[in-house]
Length: 300
Image 1 (cartoon, rainbow, N blue to C red):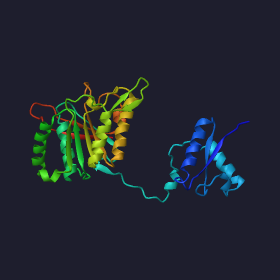
Image 2: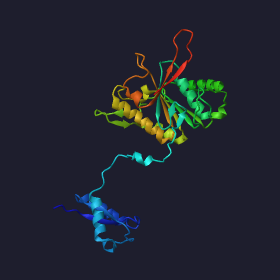
Image 3: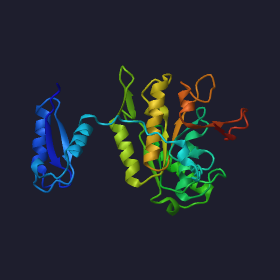
Image 4: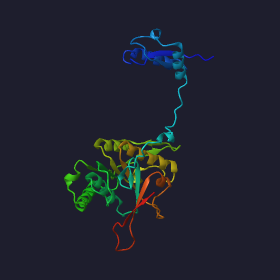
């Protein structure tokens, strides 16, 4: 026969029953199999003798405490969508960067990814189109591990001139961070079992983005920020999932920069880079006289 110890506490007056709750918690810790049963409607400072419920109600409460429901996945009954208007997809960059997701931007070295990404963040900060595509205006942040702050300053001056905007147009709207030369820039690590753990740099990065209220964030680039094995699918999926969650948390989008592999594929490593994020790639036409950015292609 199974014996279970019960401790009754009021669910309506947690402050006045604080000592009782503390005692119930001690009992639960000390007695194997003990559970705490909440008695709804119990008066302040009352005990189980003062409860006005029925035996059947008490039995139901005890059964619920002894047999908590299984934790279920957050499923949706598709039939419940009958008559519900379908919401349009939201974009941070129209047709290219979906809201609430990480977008992976790749291109060969020296093709202009970093300059393009800084311009992309400038456009959302200033509320002007990016290469003819509409952006959702919002506070933007560009975080790079590859260039120092003086180089970002030079690029920003050229970007402002090209876009016809002033410094005042982006004041309080565009923030630039250089992590060049710093150690431990990886955002997560993986143990021998492949489990991911975030790092202090991740906490600093997330706190910085939240502190300014940014809805557009660029991370440059994956070689510095991802410490896992780019050929192991679950590690890639966990990392991109982390950035997807960040995009959702800030109500915006995250743009991640990377390089193709030596064979010329548009991404390096596992195909999870391709399947776990929206993806864009920069292509530059070959030839000695055509060195400017030629094409921006969207995949998927």
